[in-house]
Image (cartoon, rainbow, N blue to C red; front, side):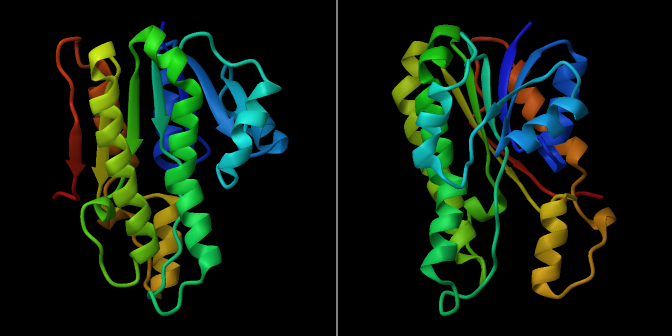
Amino acid sequence: MATHVITGAGSGIGAEVARRLLERGDTLYLLARDAGRARELAGRFEGARTLVGDLGEPERLSWAFEHQTLPEDVDSLLHIAGVVELGTVGELTPKVWNATLAANLVAPAELTRLLLPQLRRSRGHVVFVNSGAGLRANPDWSAYAASKHGLKALADALRAEESAGGVRVTSVYPGRTATPMQEKVHRQEGREYDAGRWIPVEAVATTILTALDLPRGAELTDLTVKPGG
């Protein structure tokens, strides 16, 4: 039985991954931004445990965890949560930039730092659910793409630092996926949302689990998932 810490389990890809891992009988610790959200997740994923910490305030995660019981060992840390605000470079304010970088880049770095002792002990696996925007930047996507390019750099550096100790690191780059975040993006773009046009969350969840289940002695480092017919 493996132990997983998951961010973003409230919807979309994270919810599907949490559901599948729970069905396998694994132990889950789901990160929630506040106590109310923790109760909601505990009710939705029966048997899962929760940790409270706001990814929008990564500088407070250490303090928050000092007041909670963390797992002794972590077999995987799954960074699936993320935020997005579209806008041109000429429009985006420091508030948007700071919020985007905090949730999408600084918080994953801090959460990884705080759980590295457990990951090292378990020779665990860190999975960063990145984005196609982590490989290229399009108009109106500067803040989000910058955070995701940074997330790729974080993953690459972490892999180089921790591979000798057996910690595996995978980045997954999904294209547009049928999630509530994608609905929000369509509203910001002023376009009608059709979930059927985009990657189903089940496909991205399967990609993540494939990386997790790879036998020792091999590592999937970068996985790109695109919409297909």
